Amino acid sequence: MDRLDPIYKNHVTITGNPQAEQTMVFVHGFGTDQTAWQQVASAFFDEFKIILFDNVGAGQAAAEAFIQHRYLNLHPYADDLVKIAEVLDLKQVILIGHSVGGMISLLATIRAPTLAARLILIGASPRYVNDEQYFGGFTDNDIAEIYSAVVQRQAAWADDFAPMVMANPEHPHLSEYYASTIKSIPTRQTLTVLCSIFQSDHRQDLALVNTPTLLIQAKEDFAVPLAVANYLHQHIAGSQLAVIEATGHLPHISAPAEVIAAIRAFLK
Image 1 (spheres, rainbow, N blue to C red):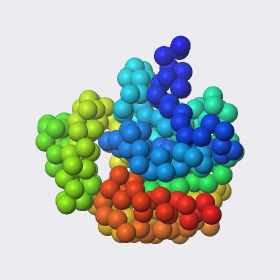
Image 2 (spheres, rainbow, N blue to C red):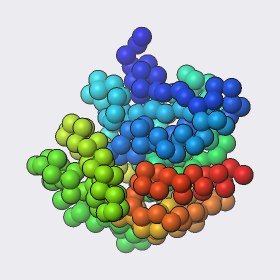
Image 3 (cartoon, helix red, strand yellow):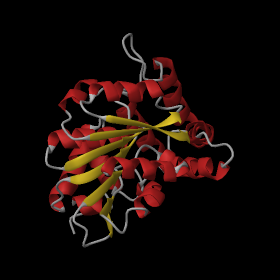
């Protein structure tokens, strides 16, 4: 097998109902891999074929792909998603992306208009950094401090960052899981992925979305505040916004039942 074939490169997993008429594709966010979708994806195993994969730089994706190709912004990740869809002949799927995986999914639907019948974005953001006209939740100083901490002490930073982002102190094992997945990524890759996320600005792309879109937002999210979800809702034509009873940036892990319910309501 070609080691940079999309199926190998992104460690694609095909599960669910192989006879289903429609397919769900899940795209994970920073610091996690396809295993983060376990609880949500399994709820749809009987009804849909399920496609899971690891973005380059995470999980079991081919490390040589990250080294050989310039994943310095979100476009190469969107290209990977489009290539996976082409190889598997996927059309009119239910495309579900978390955080940066949401923006990757959004860019892919613009690039390949037949890819998705529905687009579901969980805790997504078109820009993470504040400017004079926009509140993304982070200042330039915040970002500089994160970069510095990752370079100097990634493991300690992960231990500090994970509880803030997970925001479920009554379930410390969730933060421990998230911290462990961040620590499993080499520091250089972590820094490159974070740069590709924090330097992104896809506000102008929102007007190009023609796919029916659901925005799922936790009521409290340290990484992506509600103001960002409202911005997406205002700028993606015809989008629906579901603010769910969940805290933290990873509700598909900490509150899967609420995420599943929001997805089912949208698909009906």
